[in-house]
Length: 638
Image 1 (spheres, rainbow, N blue to C red):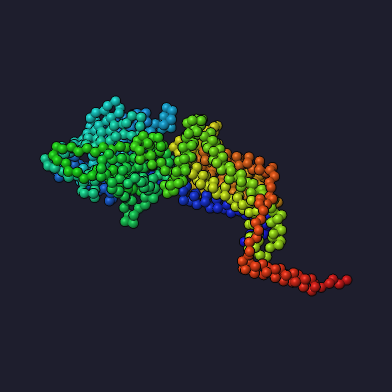
Image 2 (image 1 turned 90 degrees about the vertical axis):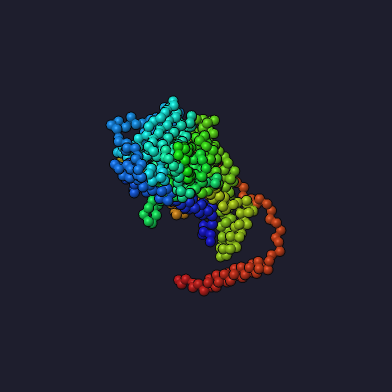
């Protein structure tokens, strides 16, 4: 049913659109805004000790088998004596070996021939660099869990060799490095790392030589791999609070599957979450800005991941193999450690670029967000080397594309304001028949070229643009630590004009108010100005409408207060451009004369004829009642 104030038809439509936008924003905040990341458990509780194999605190379930090894000190399993446990040295740096190129600085430890530190070199002189391997300062190398460890299905080996000291065979100009360890009479292992030139990729080769006098079977059918190359625990990317939540991604049969690490829930039996996938192309851990990926260079590989949101690891398993005496088998891997940026991902291997996904469930929205990113990067690379100005140019493009529809909407709003007197006449004539009243009003709208939904449609069409920009601007690696002007030195972070000495909880968000952010305040003020200039369809607004129109800018400012300054910059510039459009249309006179002559009335259906007669009878009855009331009204006595 229509509101009693017919001259405010447009305002009602606007309020409906605002309410719909509010519901969308709240729903988006609830389902897609990153929640406060769980506190990571100290690595002490999960790292396997050298004498314990895979500890019960970090069990290996389903995806890999749990090795059964002898305790430290005995060191004997079936007559096989493993090398002595590597005792920590007074100076751990003596066990460290470094590989460096223009993109990566990798520090390996001889204990387990594992990766102790992986620094992605970013910015001029490395000022924006990030270290991806979680640091464990309270643990020695013989106790800590590091990436590139090996986990064997062989119960004699298990993961014990990750906590023994390997021998450095050779190092070639800081680009290639080989480690070797030998269990006499049993196995020799050589692990080789080759850092590719000007790329975020290191090639890993694992060579297994059988030193026994008989053949040895590694693995069991497809139920368990011969061994796995692992990455764990976690990734220290420093961006867990960004717009895109951290996920484990694996690719199989040409498509990606995403598993949020925040949803690695514990099964009912109390074990850790575990999943194993056969014949996968690669597996990766992705955060907002960075990715770590392992890719097998052989057939019939499987990938697995297990753990909890605060502690997990991934691995790539080699297929079952039978190794003859003195024979050697080799398995090659590619490991990517770098930004989640398209050029860097594409240089690693082609399909890795697909880990850059702003939306994992809505293909069109992901494509649209990437299109906006492409335009943004093009402006930065070809027009002006400032991402803040590039965002302003992008805003101009979006506004230009939307301009015809927006302009038509504003003209429709102005026409609605001029039609208010005629709407009052229709109300007076057909106020008792709402169906007929709506029919006559729609006929009038068509005759005058006015759309009652003209004010809502542009706002609804801009919602996908806003959502796509929200994800892209808050999660695009290109904006990480990208400066704009003055106090805005990181477009991926809120614009911290001034830090507060205390924190204030904010509704609709997990991040408290801890700084004075100027852009959201300017954005709210500009929205208020825009509403003042917006064409209205009547002379006044109700108190409820005024309260709603005042509340919405404040509500929106609270929602976006701790969002990326790049996103708030877009909204502010877009609102200012809208103010300019409103100011222009406010001074224009519009024509509300019929745009076309009425067509001759067609013969009406008998039902319409009956309805018309019924309305005339009702009107006559009302007149008779009014005359009767006047006659019965008592006269005033003097």
